[in-house]
Structures are given as structure tokens and as C-alpha cells.
Length: 74
Image (cartoon, rainbow, N blue to C red):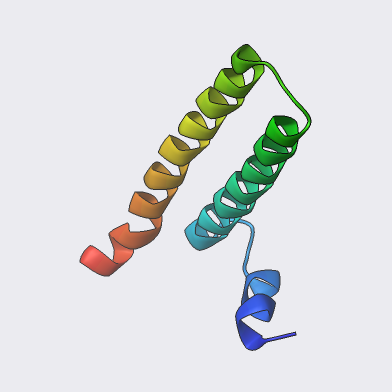
């Protein structure tokens, strides 16, 4: 295990960076599922629905990243 992987395990639950890490993991999982659905012949409607969820999670990631970087801007 690299030290980069170990760092998130020691973060406090209230740490804004933890929210960023969670959103990134969520996006990775959604992309994996979307690709799996596409490979297995999912309909265009199902893929669009997955894309909509991805867009929403990306928006949340952007907001989480802004909150996490706010202390650095001060």
C-alpha cells in the first residue's frame, strides 16, 4: 500500500478533503458501472440516466473541492 492510499484512512470525518475523496471514488465506481452496462447492451435511456447521475456527482465533487480549498485561499 502506498502512502497516498493510507492518508485518507486517517482523515477525520469532518475533513473536507475526505468528502472530495469520497466523491472521486463514487465517480470511479459509476464510470465502471456505466461501462459495464454499455458492454452488456444497456439501452440509450439507461446510459443517459447513468450520465445524469455522473453529472450530478461531478457537480458535488466541484463543490466539495471548493470547500476543501477554501482554507488554503485565506
